[in-house]
Image 1 (cartoon, rainbow, N blue to C red):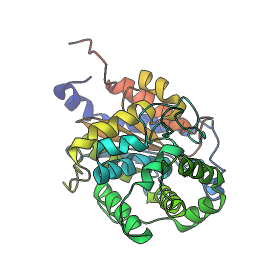
Image 2 (spheres, rainbow, N blue to C red):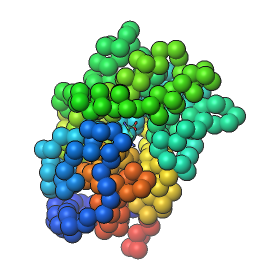
Image 3 (cartoon, rainbow, N blue to C red):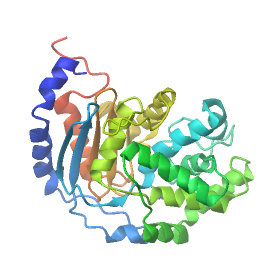
Image 4 (cartoon, rainbow, N blue to C red):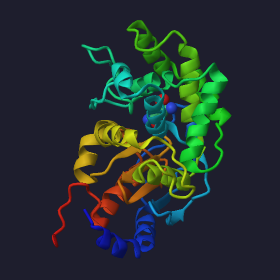
Length: 320
Ligand SMILES: NC(=O)CC[C@H](N)C(=O)O
């Protein structure tokens, strides 16, 4: 990995690098936008933005930065942090594992021995995670979730009601997973309330810059580098980043770890959030997805950024 000295020299041309990658991949027309949630199918496939926020709060960005989209699966990372804060590591581990699935994000599988969902980055595990968010009733639980996002982003956040209701009325597969987990005692009786909270967390609106600030907060030991607010307890950063590293890109997680080599999370919105610990947060937004549900341009941009900037966690510098 680049040393601090290397990183300073790398940061100077950073804007040039992301501008270059943006123009290089703007014309790439592969992939299709998610359409299993009807509202998501309406997005413009040409939208494309890249943003990097360093742990000292510098912002480098290019593209459609103001465009708001729903955070979708990227929310799973942050809900996991809140569940850990609410219950502690040991209890959360009894409800959701930390093992990659090698299957699609919406696979209906639980661990055969423990009956737990395999990890918090796939839908089943995320629904179990969200069911752990504390609060006296639906409104308090939602407000705690929104406050948590606010700490990471640095401003108020809102739920896109049309995406929320679109997913709520079509999300039968997620509802089936919740019932399966209820059957095994992995989530409590109140599954409709937890499913609503899960659909709401997926429908929180963000832009590419917000995602990069969230990533930079994880890179910066849980402290938002713009507001200096502690968004999540430092002790849980290693839990969050470990599951992102091994499970965040679903059944592409192994190849991603091999090629890009940094913890990341994608969502069917077309966002990818990646964390370079102690250095920077990276976000790419481009809606067309590959067959695994990861943004086509997002994966390309991150692969190339990692190579050009030497970001892979296990990279041994030629110079060193
Ligand atoms: N991969 C994703 O982004 C999936 C999130 C989506 N809300 C779902 O539950 O299906």
